Each structure stands twice: as C-alpha cells, then as structure tokens.
Image: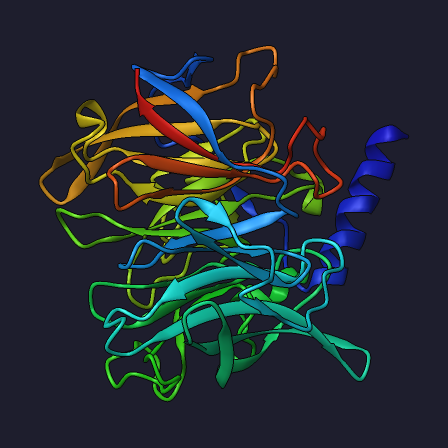
Length: 386
C-alpha cells in the first residue's frame, strides 16, 4: 500500500512538471568535509553591524564600500563607518528571498562611474527581476538606465548575483523561481546564467544567437567567481529542497559557454550526456551563496583557495584545488565557524569577498526570518591572520 502511494506521488509530480524524475548522480569529490570551528590560522572581527539583511558587498577604488540590504537600500561605508542616509533607496519587492540582491562595479570605474544592482519588483501582479545601472555621485547614487529586465521573479529562487568577468562582460545568475521546467526553456531567462555588455547589449560571441543566455539547466545559481590562474568561471548553486522528493545536492560548477547543467533532468554528478557534471556535490544540505577566490598575500596560506558562503549549513567553506591537465581535483574541503553538531558561530552567511586591504570579508543573513538573530545582526565580519 505504501509503495503504491509513493509511486502515485511520483507519477503526479512528474506529470505536473512535464519531466520524468531526474537522474540522480553521486558526489564527484572523493573526500569528506573537515569541520574547523575556529578556521585555519585566522581570527575574526566585526567590521560593520546592525545591517538589514545584507546581500552583496563591493569595494570602490577610493576606499569607499557599498553594501546592498534586501529591503531596498544600498548603504555607503566611508572611512570604515556606514553612513546614516542611504546611498540610494530602490523600490523593490522584498517578499521571501526577493528584494535588492547583487551589486557590481563597472570594470572601468571611476572613468565610467557606474554601479550595477539586481532587484526584484512587482508589476500588475507579476514578479520579475531586473538589473539596473546607477551613476556614482559621491555620497549618493542616481538611476541611470535598465540593463536587462523581465527576468522571472518569485518569492524564492531568484538567483541574484551579478559580476563582471575578465572579458569585461556582465554575468547574471537567474533562478528558475521554483518552476523547474524554465531551466531548460530557451524562451525564458529563468534557470540561466546570462551575459550582456556593460550597456545591456547581447555580445556577438554569446553561445546562442540574439540571446543573453550563457549557460542553462540551473536551479538557483547564487555565486560567481573567476579562477585567477585559468580565468574559468566557477558558480555555486542550490540543490532541490523537496522537488521530486529530493533534497541537498548543492553544487559548485565550472561554467562552460553554452553548457547545460542538467536541472531538472539530472541532479548531482550523473555522468549523463550532454549535461555538465558539477565539480562538487554536497549530499548534506549546504546551500552555498557568494563565492570568491582569495588572491591576496595578507592571508598567504589561503592564496588560490575558493571560499563559499553558506546559508543553511551556517559555515564559511574553504576549498583547496589542484589542476591535473584540463581537470580540477578537489584536495580539501573545510567548513569554518561550524561543527559537526551544526553549532555555528556566526549563523547564516550570504556573501564572501576579498577587500582591497587583502583581508576576507563575509556578510551574515540572520535577520532574513530563517536564521537565529544574534546581538548586532546583521554583520560584515573581517578575517585577519591570527
């Protein structure tokens, strides 16, 4: 009887999505995560506190910094202090996981004094995401233009990360808004990584003619970082949270131009063609968000390592890699500031970036209704050598 009910549920779910159940693969990395509650040779200090669900942090070359807060404010940090008045206040739809998300700095700043921001909005009852451009005017930013619009939006799975690559193009992560079929649908921008110029035009060398789509088959892509040695694009992605009765399978991927990353037809490292397998799959719920390669010298023992902020597992993950020919090998995965009993020091971590001072910075997200709020939350923390 139980087996009959289970099979009936599978058939029902499959008919609703238009897909058969995904092919489920394993973990490509042959190692287990190491828990380091104190990190490795580092100490942590609070840099900025009492923020309202910070999402993205960028540093400007003149020493200023900007942090986005999901309810709609971009806050200016000047001389290490947050300014009371917002740098800009945007009209966003902050329901669920939506609102103001990623920030990016024009690669020719300050010659081209532009800041880019991605946010959720609601129009005539429908929810969308768009990327806009702001002009920097010192202590204030002003609206300049819309870069790309009508990216599907929802309470969940908005993606939201934006970053300029070494090619000068703007890359945008777009989630499938909990509609898994969008990830394989070329008529939708959902479930994709998008690539446009700094003006919002479609580059001629994009893989699909007259389309901003760069890769597809993504569920909820969250982080973007380029390997400083190879210029390869790495991406973090949330795995299923109940769809098809599956959970976890969170990923780190290396993004190929025109690549299909499988969702919802494959999950994990299935080895099924033509889908691109992840570099890392976590079978325990991890949901990674922002990622960065550490390139500095102040924390010399971390140089070249990939760091991933994680939400549900409330850890900062350090990944050590080596390259064997054209392939990357995962040598070690460390979970900092958390232990095997899920006791975490700082809570949910949304983003991690390297500052111009050569130190690492990470943002908490404990006020987003999914975390345990600690004193002074939310914070930007700075990682220093011990």
